[in-house]
Image 1 (cartoon, rainbow, N blue to C red):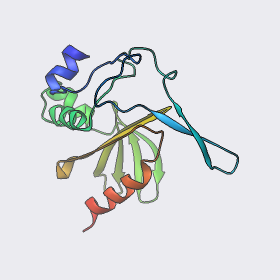
Image 2 (image 1 turned 90 degrees about the horizontal axis):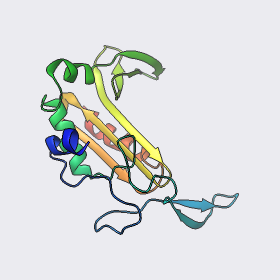
Image 3 (image 1 turned 120 degrees about the vertical axis):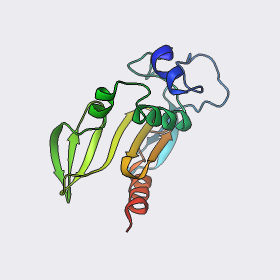
Image 4 (image 1 turned 45 degrees about the vertical axis):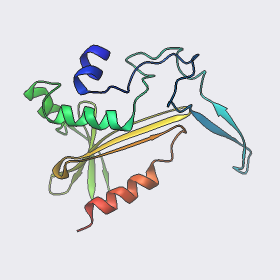
Length: 169
């Protein structure tokens, strides 16, 4: 990952960090512990939700800037072959209809495709105890949205607002 993804993509602030060492500028993940009414009683760290050192299947520590650099390098054809780059940004399989668009899956991303067959955006999200991340590409506008949080979930409201602002006529 370091040699074939992080370095070529210019992801200089991303790595697989040891969980037993404090790292400057790295947020610790946590989730609220709630009572039956939903009131937050305390906070629980996610230190037992990941292996002590991350691996390619999960546990990488990344920055929003690095994820934006990654998306731009992939889109520019700098990380994959031209054929693989095209395939990466092409919807492949219908999943389900959502109001006035369809959700389709591709190679690593899912796509929102309007009724005219145009890709509105491509997205990948990840959620685990104490962390959540979303990358969304508005390819026709050359805009990437990267949301990272050290708490599980809570990305829907900002994503909806950003989408509305980017797609307002």
